[in-house]
Amino acid sequence: MRQIIVKLGHIQSVIAITVFSWLTSVAVTLFVVYWYARFGINLNIVSHLTIATLVPILLAPPISWYIIGLLLKIDQLEVVMRKAATFDSLTGLLNRGAFMEQGNYAFHLAKRERFGFSVLIVDLDHFKSINDEFEHASGDKVLETFGKIVVKIARKSDLAGRLGGEEFAFLLPNTSAKQAWDISERLHEAIKKTAIEHDGSVIRFTVSIGIVAIPKDRVENIEKPLSMADKAMYQAKKNGRNQSAIYKKRYKKLEAG
Image 1 (tube, rainbow, N blue to C red):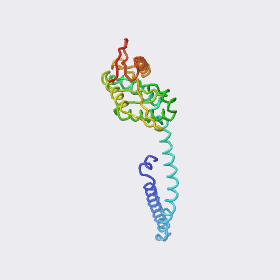
Image 2 (cartoon, rainbow, N blue to C red):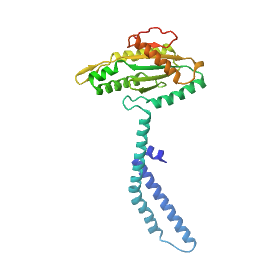
Image 3 (spheres, one colour):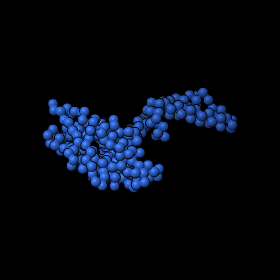
Image 4 (cartoon, rainbow, N blue to C red):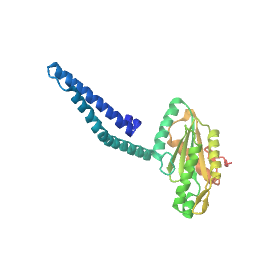
């Protein structure tokens, strides 16, 4: 019922309820008049129909307006709460809990349907220094800007989330290491072109990215690939930051273009 009300909206719901109330009132009145007539009691049908029409038309709109208003407010509150429980308020990306939940579901699907995927761990370089030099609000602006970049670059099938602080994760279904590398390059390139103005200063930032590609016959769970991508990300930092690294048994330095 609530879904129908939300779909119709406030005004149309009130109109629908008023019409339904009027039709019900008239139908009941006609039934009562007919029933009494069977026993020889003739009621004034005009006066009874007048009452049956006026009462719902006068009472239904204000009562239904108030009740429907409450239902819509409750629905809006639930939407806000669901969004808060799913998305990071600063970046607009999935929060850690939602990313892990949806990521595990994607892993189960990948295992069942037998397709591989790639995982990226992205960490903002020298983020603490940005906060120290330009104050905390500037760090928030950097995170917000990075979130917008991710939204533009991520595909519809991809999952992107903020794991915490300045660390982010991507889950890329049906994506090879080469394709994941290309996506990381697009991130680097977009960030390179980004300048953030804050209190008269211009802030630029870079990221280090770790990549791991999981073949379709090795799909297990999300935790292990995240750990592997995290190790690759730290290797990228060790190599000088502002670049990507692919997880291998022996790391190979791969600089961002």
